[in-house]
Image (cartoon, rainbow, N blue to C red; front, top):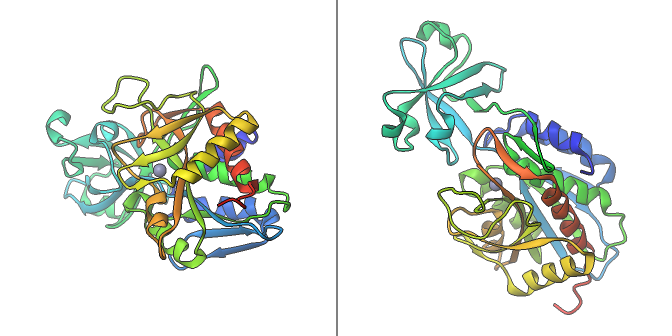
Length: 336
Ligand SMILES: [Zn+2]
């Protein structure tokens, strides 16, 4: 990988939807030496601009900084914390697993009754932080505090890695690397946008697209794998190359933009796969519907066990995504 340490640093910090500051701090610091302009808007998006040489298009890339997690809604008299979802969670993934609060307090998830009976209802779960009473728990955690999964960077064989929040620190990493490769000779003005609250309904990208008014909006995100038995069916495969989004329930990507992305891959020798999923969505959808309508696309990295503490991705696929983001940034769109 170009900068494995950077991705390790990005997955190590928490950024539950609406609370992305720690992630943004790392990205701001990394991007600053390469940016022609940087803005943090009112909702919390970080917009990094790199000027083109002129005569090109305005491209907005969106990689969401936020991760799924949980918010404390009630503290029980015995010190247990009751929570609600921040984004889409599997209760099965959370059960008997560790979480970490922003202030460093740790907890473990238990379930009221059989986990099989919880039927993916976060209301059936509770967090044990070791507290012995409500008063005790209140010394460490208050209503509205958020926590995210604990799941350190773990190397697997065949250049694969497992970690928490690969959704979507992979995308943040890829955009940072593409920014660093942008030497200012591209015709296009590029907006590298690190968005907030994607997991709550693509909220950040909506506001950013309104400000930027791009010609193209390209989400840089992950997509669930279908190559191992799971609850989903499709063609997404680990080590299948970077994914070019064709369609998900939230967006149909612009067919001309898809064709150009495929052309970039063929010309640059980038391994790629066409991505179609029938569950989920990305920031591409909100950019697509912004302003008077924007041509949308997506670069995705296929990830197994998404929204868990131990998602799995291929380092080769991650790097291929950077290559595609760079290639599309430099593309001469004169014919569109
Ligand atoms: Zn995502």
